[in-house]
Every structure is written in C-alpha cells, then in structure tokens.
Length: 108
Image 1 (tube, helix red, strand yellow):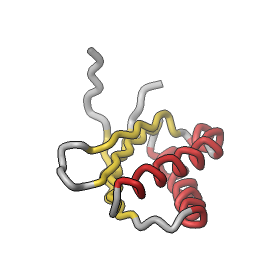
Image 2 (cartoon, rainbow, N blue to C red; image 1 turned 135 degrees about the vertical axis):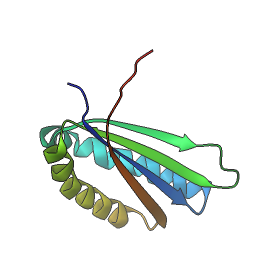
Image 3 (tube, one colour; image 1 turned 120 degrees about the vertical axis):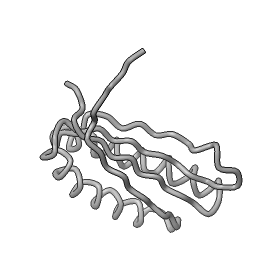
Image 4 (spheres, rainbow, N blue to C red; image 1 turned 90 degrees about the vertical axis):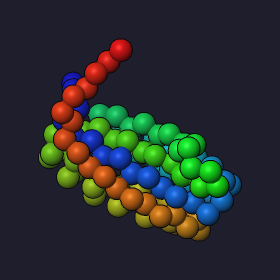
C-alpha cells in the first residue's frame, strides 16, 4: 500500500546521552503499540539522526500513513506514547512537526 500522507518530526535534546536514551525508550514504546498503530493506518516509521548540525543532538522521525483518517487516528496514539515516554524518563525534548501530502515517491 502506498503512503498518502507523511509527517516529519524533529526532536532536539540537551545531550547526546539524552538523545540515545529517549530514542531507545521511544522505540520500545512504539513496538509495544505497533499493532495499534498498524490498525490505525500507520504504514511506516523511519528514524534518523540529524548529523549536519554540529553540537546539536537531534533525531528525525518520518511517519507515513495510508490516508488522512489514519493520520488523525494516530495522533491519539502519539499522545499516549508521549505520555508513556514522560512517565519512563525525565528527558527534556523539543519537538517540531511538519506534515505533508506525498506528491512524488521515487524509488531508485
């Protein structure tokens, strides 16, 4: 199934250690909830470490959804996952989200 909508969230941390711990814990949470994300219509999550910003500890999370309904349904799950992360860690993170409609999807 091809993705229709995507979101890209950058998460900035105070230290490299905070970034690593938060990323590991976030993935545990997402894995625990993976069947619910799949049922809601999430198709894919890609995590990257932003490396072209010296002295900045940042991750990029790209999520792909089958449609707008799936995107909306996943927002509730994200709030739940964020709450779990807050309960499990005391890491300060600044998130910035960008959303878009996929116009071209080129595979090489």
